[in-house]
Length: 68
Image (cartoon, rainbow, N blue to C red):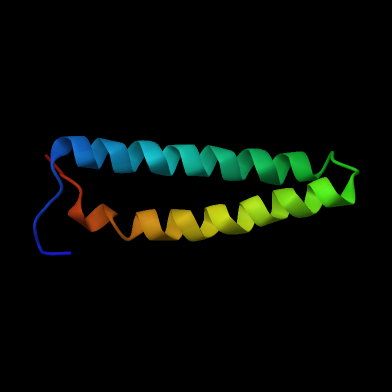
């Protein structure tokens, strides 16, 4: 990726994706405490692990976001 900043719509899309992933991560982590089925708990943990990776990747894009 070059040194160019994102366009405003790309900045908003990145922010919306980050919010979506963060909320999904929070929901999965909270629901793991009330789920008794081990298969479902493993699936939720897999979702948590994938969301953490996705969030880290999206955070790397923030320096390219519009600031004004």
